[in-house]
Image 1 (tube, one colour):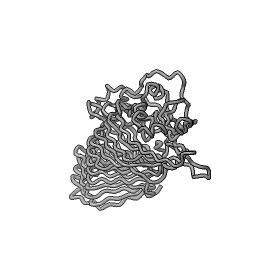
Image 2 (image 1 turned 90 degrees about the horizontal axis):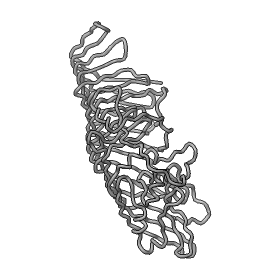
Image 3 (image 1 turned 180 degrees about the vertical axis):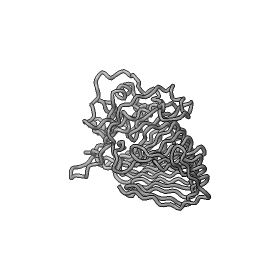
Image 4 (image 1 turned 45 degrees about the vertical axis):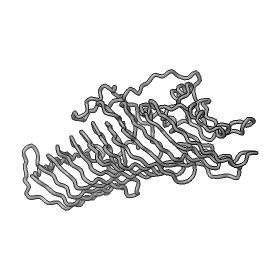
Length: 438
């Protein structure tokens, strides 16, 4: 692994001390520019200043009483990720040490301004994360205390809903349902407005175009799918059906009176979701495991066209207008680590608003903004970074954009006005060393 670091450093004076170890001491240091590369990762910063900077000569250990960076960046040579920060302030100090898989930055308090993150796909499912022992939600009040051992709340996700009389179909081996990892959505409330546009090439009836506006309230992470069918216009209601059957929620078409139903799109349901569906509701998290009639699914692209007649010629979710909030503490395994939303009487996500359109074929996009996100993170892996923090608070996500190819996300862009972190541990994993699955 090739590693290179270059910089333009200015110091007024420095000292050498050998009491308890050989150290270089800099009362004040400025770095006009520093840049480096390790494997495919390139990083750098400009206009940096550190007070009471000390460096050990017998091992990798640098620390400062306080520090600030006028700007910083981290980029992948292949364009998979690009992180830019306009300003970073560490008023209570910073420490850089060698870690078991690279180097690690530690700071009790960090503020980042104008953070821009761009991540490009293809995105795929990581390996199943190992089982974790997660503390109860009442233990989340330990934020702000020094790490290394952190209390991460589970927010009561070990719910014990009754199982359905008949077990729903199990997913293929090695491909667990996405919804199993999205139980934090069970605390989401708000509403979803959208227009379903379907073009069908039906036997006898010919080409039919159906546009249906839906207004879906979300309560405690679930929606009433029976109310969706009731909201269909008279004509669409004769052609479209919404039903729960054999562990799947289905939207299907049929020729009125004489026709048999045929799926347009369906969603696999786990045991808890199937139980709830028997009462007319379906969890919002279950919508992640979809399958479109042409074979496209949450984990596989649409199959190429064949010469057979296709009933479903176009399927679009248009005029999407979403407003949601996550109020109760919840946790999710993500990026090989754990993220807890909310805690200390703080809501997890406030004022998530999304608009846009996506379709079964072609380009689409969802754009939105979020008022604030409050989290605790443990061993979150993103590119060469591994992040842990007792509290990671995002304030003012002014831009959130997800680009789609069909129903598959291909790029994500996020711009955050302000990020604050408490007891931050940021590890930069060296190339060629083992890392956690993304």
